[in-house]
Length: 123
Image (cartoon, rainbow, N blue to C red; front, side, top):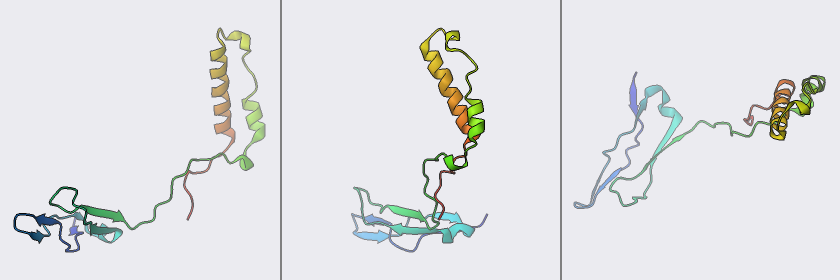
């Protein structure tokens, strides 16, 4: 793999005793990805003699969102079929088990009959 240097030549180190600066820190990356990033140095020392280096992707990534149900594309007949009661509540010794069973059944029916969005906004 060919490597390349992301540095721009900006100073990355301040030597307080001699009041001099150098560019001693190197950021390396694969040669074919060098144009995909912006490399820059900030002037915020934060009690250190090296300037922080910020490496940012130039690629615009989709913004993640919470996937949502596509109710307009739901198969409601399938949903009704999958949510039919197949077990009587009297068969469960505790009400908590009825609630859990019903929740699992509804969740499975929803996933099987209703598509969801991808979770990413198209750009």
